[in-house]
Length: 284
Image (cartoon, rainbow, N blue to C red):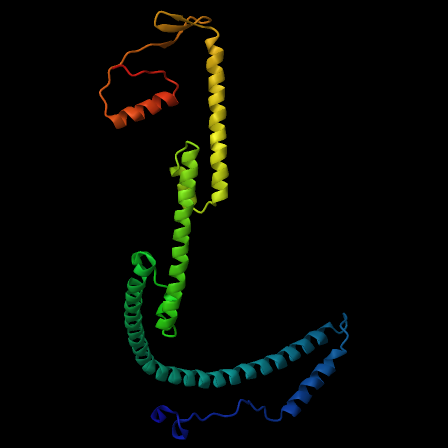
C-alpha cells in the first residue's frame, strides 16, 4: 500500500492560511482618523450640506475597503475551487473500485450468512425431535447468523428455548385436561373455555367463569320454569291441546311423529328436546 501514499513529490504546495495586508497599521490609522473626524459632526440646517458630503466620503471609503475585500476573496477562493476540482477528480477514479469491492464483500457476506443459516437449520432439525417440537415452527434469529455468534452459543439458546417451550406445552396440556374435566362435571361444553386457555387466560379465572356461566344458566332455567308454572295456572287441556284460558290461544299440542334415526342421532335429538323443555316418549 506504500505505492498509494501521497509522498513529498506528490504533496500539495500552499501558502499558510494567512492573507497579509501590507501597511495595515497605516491603513487602520487613516480609517480611524476619518471616523474620528466626522464622529463629532453636528447636523443642523446650517451644516446639512457638509454632513451629506461627509457621509458620501465615508461611504466611498467603506466601499473601497469592501471592494478590496471581495477582490482578494475571489482570487483566494478561485485557487481553492480549482484545487478542490482536481482533488475530487482523483477521488472519482477511486470510487468505482471501492464500490466494486463493497458489492463483492456484501455478496460474500450473504453467501456466508446463508451457509450458516443452513447449519443452524440442520441443528434445529436435529434437536427439535428430542423435545417433541416441530422444527418448522422454530424461526432462525437474525443474531445467530452474525459471524461473532458461535454454533455453541446457538445450540445453548436453542436448548433453553426448546425446554421453555416444552414446559409450556406440558402446562397447557395439564391445564386443558383440568378445564375439560371441570367443564364436563358442570355439564357445559369445554371447547370455548379451552380456546380462551390457549389465548393466555389463566386457569383460576376460567374455573370461576365456568361457575358463573352455570349459575347464570340455572338462574335462566329457574326464571323459565317459574314462567311456565305461572302460565299453567291459566291453562286448560281440551282434547289433545292445551289452551290459554285468558286469551283462548293454543299454547301446546300433542303431535305424533314417526322418525327413522340412528342411535347417535336419537341421542342428539333427545338432548335437543330436553333442552327446549319438549315432552316426548318412545313408542315401541
